[in-house]
Length: 71
Image 1: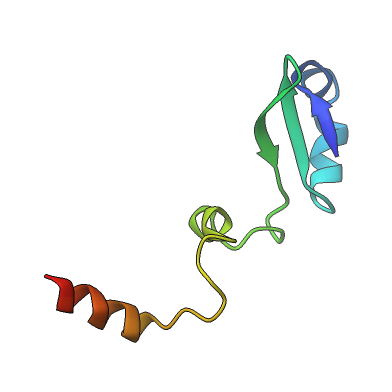
Image 2: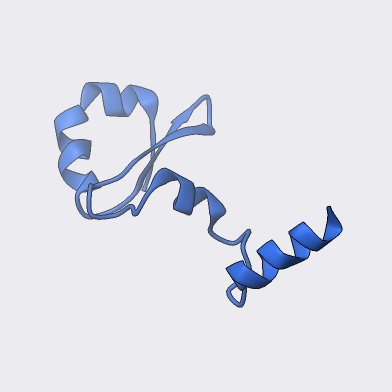
């Protein structure tokens, strides 16, 4: 769900309840500036940011060995 910051300010209780079930993207001047998530929705901020960056078939030990070999 995408809502304006003004709408969130005026109806915070409503969006707080909705956030328990879905992600709410808050916009300012039409641009996304924040997300409101329920506690069960997110694993961590870092893992959320890395989603899609790290390939599914990544092997941590192999990557570490390759980095060390380059040094």
